[in-house]
Length: 245
Image 1 (cartoon, rainbow, N blue to C red):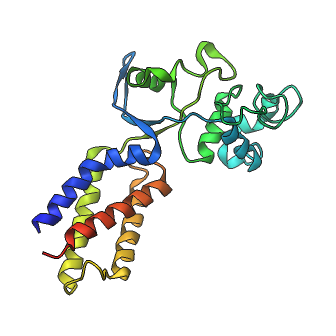
Image 2 (image 1 turned 30 degrees about the horizontal axis):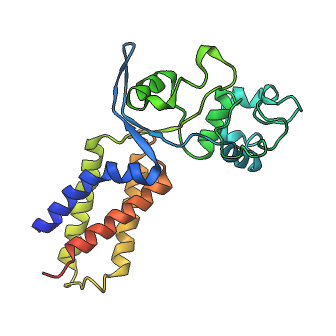
Image 3 (image 1 turned 135 degrees about the horizontal axis):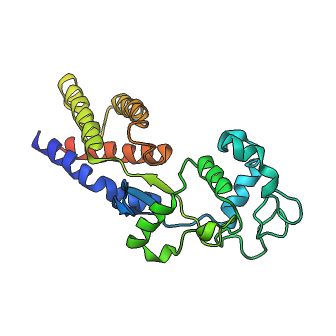
């Protein structure tokens, strides 16, 4: 039992660190900017590249209304480049400039950036969030649309909200209870021969629980990658808890 509780505390402590390495993000602690309180969040280290945005275009990003705010979607014609293509205004055509595929995309509006963020299930930070992030990571430079610019002139990094500690405490309490039930109802399980059906059931319960919590934690980190992280935690717990004594 002591090993089990120790494992829970260990994973709870390592979770934010694991997320940072898995997602290539930097943690931005909550703070206040010009009298406005901002919650903690993760900021992507890697900016949107020309290649990233090109893939969005290839998936009919300018034609799928689901990724756009209605008003912006209805005014898409203003997002055409000089050649009449729906594309960044820094491009001469509908393809990224030769040799600059992996450079940061320039020449897109906030509306286009928001649509791209929705496409990959991330969020576009506000100008106040950007100012807060600059205190932690000055290298991100100035806000992409500073001076009320129509199109960005600096790298665009996306963000995800940080899940408050009490939310994770609730999740791990549920996990502990589930593990207790498995322990009481199961025979002694070999560390080599783990009951696969119970592991799948545990993953399913965590998946269902995560879905019900998503609204409460304000779009916490990318759901698919978060599930992978939870699967890793379950595996780590099972190795510690079921280790032969």
